[in-house]
Image 1 (spheres, rainbow, N blue to C red):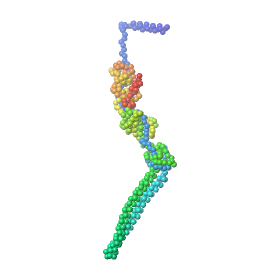
Image 2 (image 1 turned 90 degrees about the horizontal axis):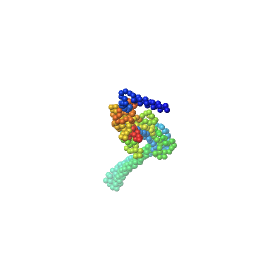
Image 3 (image 1 turned 90 degrees about the vertical axis):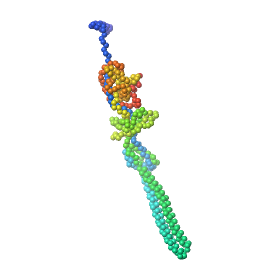
Image 4 (image 1 turned 180 degrees about the vertical axis):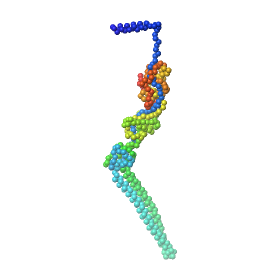
Length: 428
């Protein structure tokens, strides 16, 4: 067996070499100092943005269902889906000729009532005038008879008859004046009723013109010429107010506590994947859904030249806090333990174990540190798994590792869990 022979010979040579040597025969060489090779980066501070990511839906500021306000037959439809309309745009008419005639008839009835009052007053004034002439004549006749009675030319009864004629003429005038007043009041009341009827007819005529109440876009036409709108309330069209859009979105209960109407909100939509839009939060709901445990919120979309539409899906990002000097380290530098997360830093050439309190994940590779590190610390990013507290270290520099880059931190609620904490939960 040649291989075995070679091994035995080699072993003999090694033993002979060990047996030979200088004056320190049989003394072992001094042990070489053991150092752990690691890579480190310097801890720096940077601006950290705390943000919440969620989704929502664009909603029109107002959506109207335009209904018929009077019954009638639909005429002169001039609109279709997609048409832009203003409050002065006539979309169609309902039985136009019927309401035109009704308005004219009501106007004529009212004007006739007014003319009847004038005519009655004219006739009454003439009648009273004639009665006053009769009264004057009766007074004159009586005045001529009194001297004759005193001379004995006529009897006392004849004088009394002329006095009665005078008194009767006076009573007749008073009765006519009172009758005129009563008749005028009655006729004026009737005229007022006819004026109201005319006003209703004019209003119905105006309502027979179906107009948009807003400046918007026709979303759906719901009538055609000849259709009968049998009653007020028959749907004519659906309109969307394009003047403003709103964002409707929900937040988990915990996250809603960190959002205010001053929180900055941006969003993206699939129709414009490279553009970012702004919205102003104006409402954070007071009620939480007891099943989904979410709070409904609203924001007004700021003006833009993009053709955003109601119903668009939106990805939202809400900035809840902005920290100017946050400590952010590579996530790989953190080690999960039974007592929480730790990291190793180099002090005087040795590894020093530091307990950490982690904040939010800043990116896929970086995490914020709330306590346990300070700016300028040299933190181990490679080789930490084999370290013990106090072992000597040989720093090989950062290598491919660089200081963490500032990116928006994603809030996961209160309290938030960092990515290393999530990994620790999964660890056996």
